[in-house]
Structures are given as structure tokens and as C-alpha cells.
Length: 438
Image 1: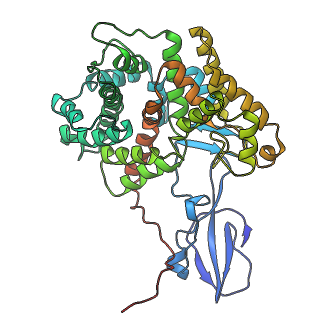
Image 2 (image 1 turned 180 degrees about the horizontal axis):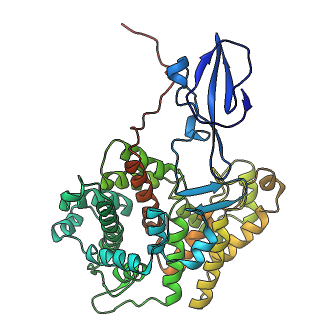
């Protein structure tokens, strides 16, 4: 393929030979060549537009795992994995993390701008209004067996909650989007807390409208009828940071799932429930739990840091929390999360031996030529579990916390699909089965 200039448009099949028009790339195929438009994003991302390729030539592009395929044009989040850059609506993640809470971050992702004081107060009012679960919905929890995974409960209850607000399913004005988003973000927190209480055999605790978003979550999880939980300000701030750093991350597996389901015309609740299921996987949202299990194994003497590094180099066991599908440089969120974990442990006056092991593991790996040459650096999952442990979140709730944090990004992407009147997602395949049978 050759390239000259940049332009958008429709490809066309031409005879072999000749120069490429400006803004197009020539793809040589048997029997001729096709001119494909070139696209460049606002921050320099380059793409070859193949939307007309199959119609013009009968060919498709095969890209298993979609590692080199763009599925949409988006204005929400920018990631440059080679340079270690992450931006929400143009703002570097460090600036967002240092100057906003999770509610402001959610509204930034939804609307493209940070909210005014009045806009934030209006959204917080909506969150308070939607915090309670319908009593009929609350009884659904009794149908789950003891020990049911919180992610299974979360996905099922998000879908079930839509049955109690059917009027939101068919409306698509800007006001409807905002109210549906507030309902989901508020109720997912209550659902998560109720599922946690059920797994421990404790009575549920209702939301307190006087508390902010993260304080309320901690209140519902850890308060008891005879003992009100009052988190330290440092604990609430750390949880806000965790949520912000997880709020969106471009077209990852779960976000792409939300967009794909939404492209069919499915409502917000169904699309987000599907995203929860995608996040559940160990290679996606479950990786932070795997990191803690790995660190515990080292702490318990089942392995050593050096042995774990060597086994990973030989391909005998994974080094959880290292490497990323997109980042081939330092993940900009890791430094923020590592520092927040250290600050929180200091504020609590406690030591976590797993944190010390994690820092030792990082220091060895980032100077080892094997990892340096392969550009394998710690990712967000490497320290997120340390912070959640310090907050008091149990291991089986880690992925649920990830889901709560990622909720604004999923919703923002779903809204973008709806607003753009996106075509239904319909990937192609190459059939390699038996040609024909009688």
C-alpha cells in the first residue's frame, strides 16, 4: 500500500498503475487496485478508511482481536500508548484526577465540558433521587444463592432495574439521557452495596442523601444498624481517584461491548449490563484481583520476587499487572494510583506487606532487559488492588468497583452511539469450515 496526502471519501477500484490522488492510499489487489481515503484524528492518529472496500472489491480486512481496527469516530477519550498519554475530552488525566471528583468527571465525559456549579448540583440532586431501590427490586436479591458472584448480581440487577422505569427505555432527549445516566450511576452503587451485604449475611443499609457519591457507597457497604461507618476524608478521596482513573479508557473490550449492543437500538440498561459481563473477564476487569492473588502467593512464601520474574520470562506463569494491549510506555494512571496508595496507607497509619512486594516487583521488572525490550510496564491493575485493600474493599468486590468507576465511560459511549445514529455493528468473518455437505 502506498500513501499520499490526507482526505476522507469513498474508495474506488481502478486499473493497475497510475499515481494515487492526494489524500488516498492505493491498495494493490488481483485484477487492479483500489484507492482508499486517509483519515487523521485531531491528535495525529492515522487511519485508512476501508468502509467501502468490500462493496468495491469483495475483499474485507482480517484483524483478529481488532488490534488494528478502528470501529468508530469518538470525541470522548484519547489514548496514545506509545507516548503514555491519556486524556478525557482533551484534558490530561493528571489534571482531571487532581481537580475533579467522580461526579464532575462523569459530566465531563457525558457533555464534553466540566459542569458549572449549578449543573453539578442538579446532577447530584438526581443521584440522591435515584439512590433507593424499588422494594420489589430489592427482593430480587433473595433469589440469588449464597456465594453468588457480585458481578453476576450486578449485571442481572441492572437489567431488572429497567423494568421499574419503563418510561426511560423509549425516550431519547438530552434530558432523558441525563436522568437515565443519573439513575444508573446511583442505583449501581446501591446494587453493589446490597450484593456485598447479602454475601456477608448482613442487613442492607439504605443510602444517606447527606453524603457524597463515594462516601455513600462506603456507608452502605460498611455501616451496621448499631454502628455507623464514617470514612476518613483520605479514604473517600482515594476512592474518588480510583473511580476517576477507571472512568473511561477508549475502545476497550467492555466499552466496545456497550457500543455494539447500543448500536442495535438496545436501551442504556441492556447495553451497560452487557458491558458489565464483558468486564467480568480475568483478562479485563478481573486482572486487579489476579495481581493481589499473585502478591499474596509471594508473601506466603509460595514464590519469591526473583522466581516470579524468571517464571514470567520463561512463559511458565503470567506476571499479572504488567503489559498492556495499548500502552507500550508507562501508563500515566499508575504513578497517580501508586502515590495515592502510599498516601492512604500513611494516613491510616498502616502497612501493607503486599504494597512493599509490589514496589519491589516493579523495581526489578522495569530494569530487567527482558521487560524493557518488550516494553512491559506496570498497568493500572498493578496498584489498584492495593488501594482498594487499604479502603477496605474485599477481593471479590474488586471488579464491581471497577464497574462502578467505568460506568460514566460506558454511558458516554452509549450516548455517543445514539446521538450519531450509528449503524448497527456487524463485523465480517472469513469462513474456514467444511465447504459443503450432503
